[in-house]
Image (cartoon, rainbow, N blue to C red):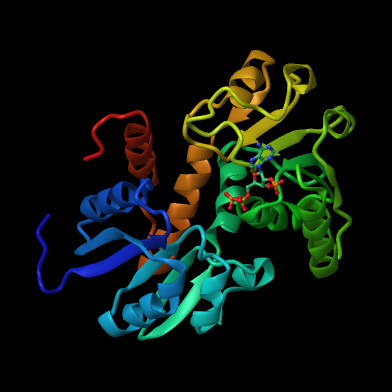
Length: 288
Ligand code: ATR
């Protein structure tokens, strides 16, 4: 890497942030396209968020990704929001446009692109979403704008009801919500076309956990797990055994990164190479 006085800085703010593979993904894209830029991670504590954003303006950092726990709070410190970021109330990408910080939500576009890549048309499909946390929220908004049949199931029922209430109010849709129990899973999955796990269940180190038992998984079902570590979660392994169509979390990770890249550089990113790097990083191979 040839760092010069012209090198532009991009990065990720979160806490924690060190586990992220976004640096490998973006730095490899910079290298492939010969872009004089570098992408770093910054672990920013909650109490320093405002100062960090002031620093972005002051230092001329060109763009940021934003992750847990800052996706909602960061809105207070930026100047403008995209339609999706305003709708969802969360930002995962910031563009520094001559000191004006503009917030976007590429998790929203990322999930839609993921379904597109796998040739899944959401229109008319019955979809069950597990989870009502930060990750689930962007996914729920994206899906609810496409499909008229969405059910949200969450361990904490109140959060599922709140999210469904927000979707119904803002999008004028009819999303239903319930607590996540074997009874509610059975009822909602019996005729579901698509199941999306947007909880952290199954993520390393708890790789033997799944919220959905085998009996609910069918051949004519599409199962997407947003967890990408491990690449094949217990849910996806069992879905594969049931001959369901499986989509792992890497595609969504890559698609949201690609959308952020497009916002920053206004050009198409080398998405195939970005995917290869992500897969290598996640399977312990050398990333670059
Ligand atoms: P993120 O931003 O990654 O979505 P989050 O906002 O903390 O993180 O949300 C985590 C999601 O995983 C929530 O839906 C959570 O359920 P609760 O709302 O009941 O906490 C869900 N989750 C985490 N661990 C779980 C478990 N062991 N069983 C069921 N759901 C779980």
